[in-house]
Image (cartoon, rainbow, N blue to C red; front, side, top):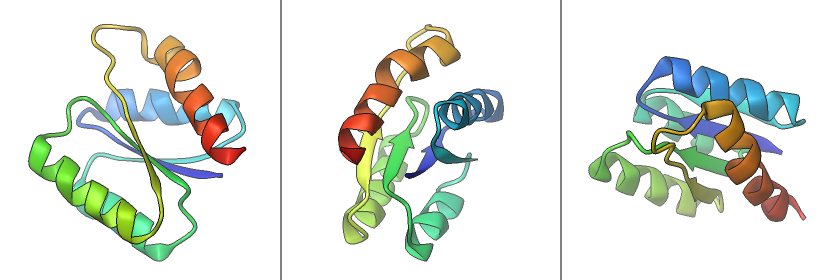
Length: 100
């Protein structure tokens, strides 16, 4: 399963993609909407994880691109939690549910 993670801060996106790879996902992280839309448009993406720092207009653009390519959208939001723990406890189970 290929997952694209988009967030505002490179360090958080990098940590999230590292955890996802450790969990067996093909994860790609980006900080720009253009990059995320390009990856989705290229095909093969199963899920898009949108971080809490991504603004509403960008979220709409990303959701539209995801819908056009049958990509599942998962909304993330750390709210002060540890990135690694949050991804393992919240994001990974959602991704596994998508893949089953």
